[in-house]
Length: 432
Ligand code: NAD
Image (cartoon, rainbow, N blue to C red):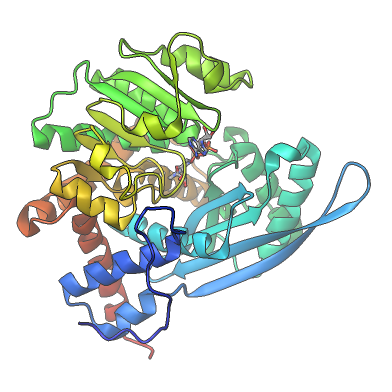
């Protein structure tokens, strides 16, 4: 066994109502791969903890003139392969441990697609649905100022995540730029096009999910034509995954959901209508042409492809035995617990892990960052062709490990990613 010097609580993740801590899960995943890779114990111990963690108070003037102080975080797990990269989440359930887990997963994600970034993540404990547009803008600008000491285009580059949009990235960039006294477009990615965003960024994560599903299904000899697909979460990732899987792989979306619940129609749903409904402020539950299902029931529906694209810890030891999909691709970060992973693997269900399946977003963020630094605009064709190349190559690398090692795909992807990060640390010499 490897010697690990940091003290952390043991992982509790039996999926039976016991609280699941994403950071402990992320550490357990690293421990498992470290053992398989026979990783240097010092490098392993270093990678179990984030490099840097910042907690900030964000005083924000409300529309009624009062001031509320929100709590925000930015965590940089690793800068070993390049600047930290990762999204900002606005959600009432944000915790420091969740942000730490997400930042570690970002390190592996950048490494598995082989882009020169480390891993970071941030968030604010807030329900943005309770705030006005002006309040969100003021909170975001203040957040950018509070994070300024540790972020920068060569240091740490935030991006959108749950409940954060291109508009919010625009405010963030402007807030940071005001402080610096010059326009710093490369400080965030996922910006609106007009202020240095990249074509193809909005749909990039859903497009990446589609490419990974197509590439893995081809290697599994799984026919996707008219194959039923179920999508949990109908936000940025879920909507584009539903639409592009249908368009590019010929699947048939039979169920989707959001926080209001899900809708199921075995004959297929009209994805364009559902997108329109959401864009007009509606809820999936308002969609008429299908049966209502709960988010729990949705995961267990008969289907070929299942795309969890909402939040963490959705597939657990409790429901993994009832999942009917043949292929799962994790649009969300951390939707499957380790116990569930084992059950899925034993049942022969292939689960394309988050660090690979949803890496399209960070890959096009890399393209956006490059365009910002070089003052260039790339065409949509260029962006999509490069994304296709990066992700197909990553799937091929992971599949090769998967075949060689006879492990599940998460372990294979981690083996590729952790090896790359460990080699980067090793080649710079160890500072401990
Ligand atoms: P989003 O806010 O645009 O959408 C989230 C969706 O999930 C919404 O439809 C919401 O209603 C739904 N949802 C929330 N809780 C749910 C629940 N319990 N059951 C069912 N649906 C629920 O967020 P997003 O950007 O689409 O991110 C979704 C996931 O994908 C997150 O895990 C995020 O970290 C991950 N991700 C996002 C990107 C990106 O580029 N946006 C990239 C990589 C990974």
